[in-house]
Amino acid sequence: MARDERTILHCDMDAFYASVEQRDNPDLSGVPVLVGGDRKRGVVCACSYEARPFGVRSGMAMARALQLCPQARVLPVRMERYRQVSERIFEIFHQYSDLVEPLSVDEAFIDVTASRRLLGDGPEIAASIRQTVRDELDLPVSVGVAPNKFLAKLCSGEAKPDGIHVLETGDVEGYLAPLPLGRIWGLGPRGVEKLRRHGCRTVADALRLTPDRLRALFGVQGDRLYNLLRGQDDRPVDPGRERKSVGAEETFMTDLVDLQDLERQLWRLADQVSRRARRLGLGGTVVTVKLKGADRTVRTRSHSFSEVVDQAEPMVAWAQSQLADLVGGQPVRLLGVYLAGLAPVSQLGLFARDERRRKLDRVRDSIRDRYGERGLTRASLIGLSGSVQRQADGVEDGD
Ligand SMILES: [Mg+2]
Image (cartoon, rainbow, N blue to C red; front, top):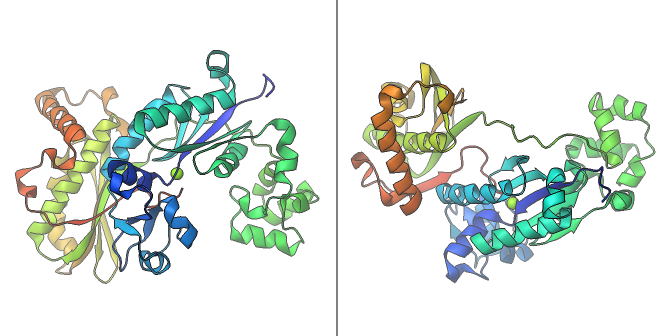
């Protein structure tokens, strides 16, 4: 790769949730594993590579997946666990560059342009990242190496499972030409259909469309599409891509009606939210409670605090006062707690008066980090029944 070009990596863990489960439980290695909701109304969030020859994909209804692959082992989503592993993965990514842009819990762009002098070229850095993730976490990660984000993401898809795919500038045109237009980032099924009506099925077909024609079809996005079709994408890797909220939600195995049960769940979810926020060094000013009834109607209610909070108590105190009214006597299928209006806590200095409590929180967090969610728990949580944990900000693991 020429020295004046950027080197962008797209790193994507393979079947992340399923790989973590297989690693944590050796009995599952080599076995089709589906991670997701329950067998009746759940969705597959991740499936191991052993399940894929049966036609199982993430995002599929669990019931359908089990028709295709009845011998699969079904496991609940353990989001806390995946987040723990994810934090370590991102620490590794950060050893190679400061420019790390997370796309999800298991996926990131890394601009290693400035690291090349010290750490070697793109493929060498990619190999090193893969080896480090393998050595330290015993998990597979696929890496695409290319001059920009668009191409790097295509390449990591090409690299799967457990590989590296490198695209040099000289090879871009030939690589893109035969690709179906659905592979172009941001071009949804409707866009693909529009282009098909103009006789275009592949990237090569669409190259004959002028910028004016593309603008007529796609508005301002037409210019971007014109460039992407030519493998050009100058968007920077943006490490500052900010989180808008921190949340946790729970879909219950059986609908809850008892207010005390719901309050216990409220505590547990708020605890998780506050712990996540603290781990990120963030607090928030807006708390939202979300509730889905057995009839699937969703109700939310939000409250703004006059100052930034990162602890469960104020969130629960407010939410408890709303609960009876929100529930309205209906059975509850899902409960969620979110914290938004996020800001770094360190810059606020609001908590000096709470220093003792904050120390306690830190001790609690570290015990849980070491021993898991059950390592320490509020007295009121003991005796909770099992339920399906869902990731609050995007349920699917993808690949
Ligand atoms: Mg992945």
